[in-house]
Length: 455
Image 1 (cartoon, rainbow, N blue to C red):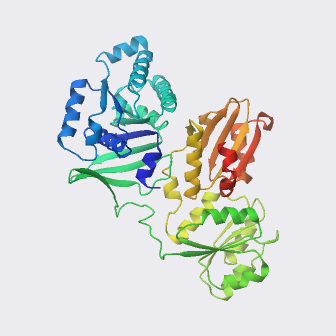
Image 2 (tube, rainbow, N blue to C red):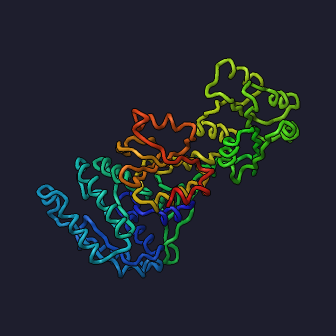
Image 3 (spheres, helix red, strand yellow):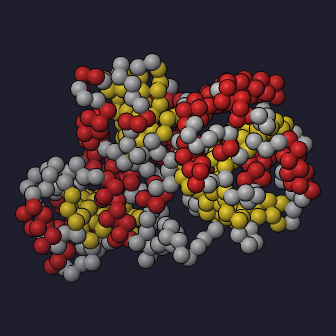
């Protein structure tokens, strides 16, 4: 999805950048773009400074943010904040925030220069504060922005905020405009760089391209469409591979009967993914490619969960481009296809997705699943019951977790096939008796299982 779509979907937004690069202005712009006209700002700067900053923004007469500027409520931390915090903790600040939100009932809350709220060693206070704000956001239904200026002294603080954000962007000041880059996002986002500038008294965003940046658009494919022929009788493989390669740059075809294989191979598809119909190694398709001097690249998927060294050598010597076992790692297979076509159609955007993330409500869970499916990212989603708490720290890099009820969890495991679940579960539990799987579905089945997952 586009950057603006990702921002709209996100509920907790972290905006980084040096001083006076437009972090606060961008927050206001986004509120205006979404018609959120009741804005509450908490700032570490004193009220006089913040009023001057707001007045400077007003003086620019920017048409698409003028309507919301008059509705901003501003609260600043007390100058004695460090002393109060040391003496009383952060409860008194949270109470002030609760009161202000109860009174104003905002639809957007901006924490301006939140990196100055806490010292770098106060990670316990920060984590507790963020958890309380997230819970408050969910109950009161407002959008939250955090702005921060990264420095060596607050690196740990910002990393902790990142753990709670749905999208994290960085704004850089260039000569004629500001440059926005998406550092990571809960939702797949492309393009991930934008110019942020004022034209004719309006803020606009323009996609930014840099010839020196390796993105999936820079690594353009050598031709408009690549043809992929998938030869297998295995229904699960057909579903998995058909789902992953159902993209604009591919034409996907299948062969599941012996009678149709030769004719389809002779059309010289760019890529052939071959899973033999029997358990034995079968190089007949490789021989057809060689004998007819076809340029097709063949990726061989065996019917065993391991590959013997001799079998791999035999496959390569018979003309296979690469060999994978039946329980192949999906990302490794996709990476081989990306090398062939010369475009990172999957892994580049995947690297930008915020991962290892707690999902705070069922609505967010379903939004994430909907977008992952739309963008053709492969995932398994499972619901399990366990008395043992599954902490975020247990998760792998690209996993998401939602605590549904007391002992019930829903996990989204990116790039994980159900065939791999036994290995994944061993990372969470020492004993299979510690958990019960209620359901487990893969991405291709999501549309027909959506109601069960999201009910």
